[in-house]
Length: 210
Image (cartoon, rainbow, N blue to C red):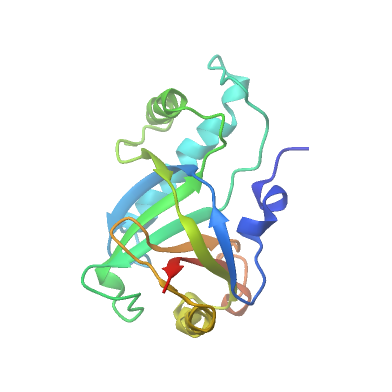
């Protein structure tokens, strides 16, 4: 069976619906950066999705072609994730989506090197006639974080975040959002097929001791 990150790393992909503190290992991603409302039809965010998945599947299917990746094993493409922030805003203002900065990402298996990634970007551009120049090989060291499983629409996330903040207060931590540590979401539901009330999203925040 193909390796499934969600099943093998449940601590990072399948948290409970109560807050928990974890230390996240250094992780490599395919990443595309942008700004603006993610719901805009044909906007930058939707364009980024096309690039991310195209490159991700080029890597996933590479074993069938001439480019051989050392240490490759078959795997399920991990879920879409996103790092989000707004300039001069503490936390997240969900009512002002146009002000969002985002880095949309898909996790890379550890065997994928920067050289393999560069090959995949070039190969995807050739085969899909798609400009993938905005895709980057991104390494993130999140460190100590609090996370929780949010169930429901994205606009209801403030209620869940408030539960996380109360947990931090009770346990001697505070949020540690910086210009390198962001509000992080992992999307476990296909929003095209699942009702918003049942969407599952991992919410993760970087923290530090008070």
